[in-house]
Image (cartoon, rainbow, N blue to C red; front, top):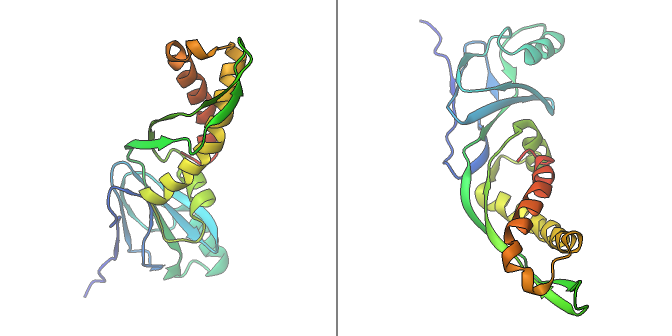
Length: 203
């Protein structure tokens, strides 16, 4: 009787960013299925190995070069082998609301009096660099959901946006009566700076 290959596929929902498959023991007949807008990463001995894009794969060592090399060193190429598989959902999560938790205290450049400024808006988040996001924000956890990621980046935004608002007002010498007409200046300036900050986390 032929051996039935195990199937490894994503079983989370669309609000999940990263999901770890519960199985950790595989063999060379195991089938990995990665759907569109997903990637999968193998971990072995705490090391991130091969990354798979959409498709169906048989976990033969020639299909997973980094894992194959590690297996040959540790097990002599024998099966089964033990490792972890993380799925990364790269679907864009849209219309996520955010706002500053306190006001930015700023000295108005034209008239010299102090003012308080806050900001709010919406953001979209998408996993851009799966390996970086997994290593920096997930660690040894089995799951990274939308709410946890949003919670992290809301706090992250508070410190960045308040600093960038003050910098944008100062560098563009915007006075209190020009705020409304300079919203596009604010938005573009802050957005450009935040791209680099978010990219550090693979988002």
